[in-house]
Image 1 (cartoon, rainbow, N blue to C red):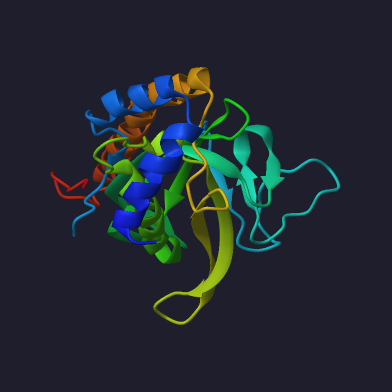
Image 2: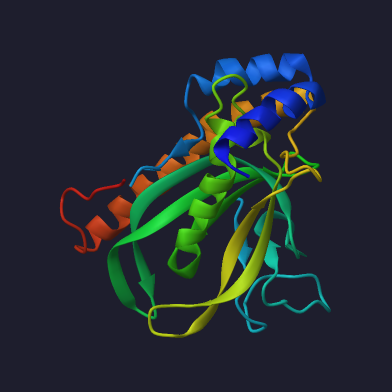
Length: 238
């Protein structure tokens, strides 16, 4: 569907399918341009949502359950979810220094994605990197015509996004599970929009707390590796 057809669809369908109070709220909030802190033009006690890569994963599960590769693991509740539906409230593009098999890699590109599980108030945070990194652009591309609509802009947090997984090779040809993002739509390709005003306001409030959480992660990453002598005094974070 072309952008012009999408804009017409917004005016013809979205306006009649979403409460007018919600449309007005999103229009006001859209002017603040919150939710995405990335260039679209060019754990501990954290509520981690991670993609299980193989059945040997060390995630903690109830007795008798085994990790399922390609499923998602929600750490706060120690449960696996095959294809979670979520509201994404904040996306931060940044550089982090990582350590894997005792090898330190400086300034590795990440997206930190924060949101809330659908049908609940459970927050989550995802580190998106490696083969999953480019998939965030799918999320941007799917939602952009609606987020940027001149008459009825839709907040990032208002979309229903289904997470999934698929096998994808890295630069060395090794296969990994990558995270996929799918904007859920009605049969006419119009996105399914959060139509509970109280929940939409809760999601909007989550933007600020998510931004603080993400910035805290970035600051801690810089401090931790600077203490190890592995970082220069100044490291770019976006």
